[in-house]
Length: 160
Image 1 (cartoon, rainbow, N blue to C red):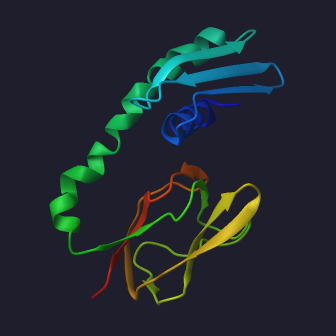
Image 2: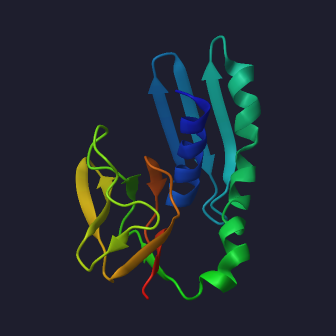
């Protein structure tokens, strides 16, 4: 399990409302506890025999991640003319139908109502997310294979 996967797991757990998650894979054991009031990580334990210090230091940097949503807030005034396509469920966001295929859409692509934009996987079910408007993709707001929440913005679309 690499650092990015651990950071994504911390974000996902802190935003999901779950009080505690324990994960064991091979020689890696992770326990994440959150407080329900603020949904911020309270205690994070990462235990791995030889690499404990190497992983523990970057995990402490995880609270920096909430600063990332502030970045889209800065250009919010010039994105007001765009339509935001949001995730209808909690799951994992995929831009491609399979790892060896091309992405459903790219920035600058023209889309029509009913076009498949991405897939959100929830509990081993892959749900196609379709466009509800006709327009042009201005920005893709989520990285491929990232956890997403209900109502999280995925795409910005210019309807003109």
